[in-house]
Length: 140
Image 1 (tube, rainbow, N blue to C red):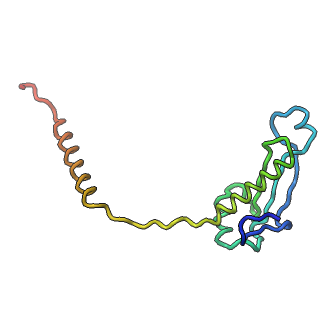
Image 2 (cartoon, rainbow, N blue to C red; image 1 turned 135 degrees about the vertical axis):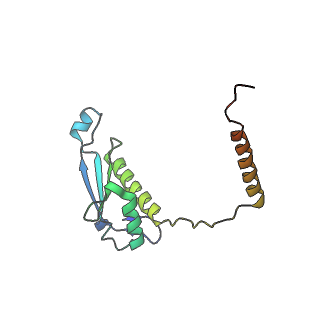
């Protein structure tokens, strides 16, 4: 069981873990021990996530989202299988938590009179500078 928030709790049947040998350097340890963790979360079938959260999670997951609606997270940073397992679960929790946040609505504001005045003064000043860039005649 994985607790994300008070209302979102992921059951064990929704998570599947498989262990493989990690890639990269590590000597004999890499060749012998299956430390890499592939965590599969059946997000589409999860009863704890709302459709809006599932849609945002799918967008955030990108290539990690499979065609059958599962989210796959792979962790192979450390040599410890237990630590990789914890890291995969932490990443899943962070991703789901990010999907639950709603963006703050932006309130449109009008520019102040002073800022409008400063903007127009800067434009006229810039225009004067550019108008002085004319061609120089030879008789001067």
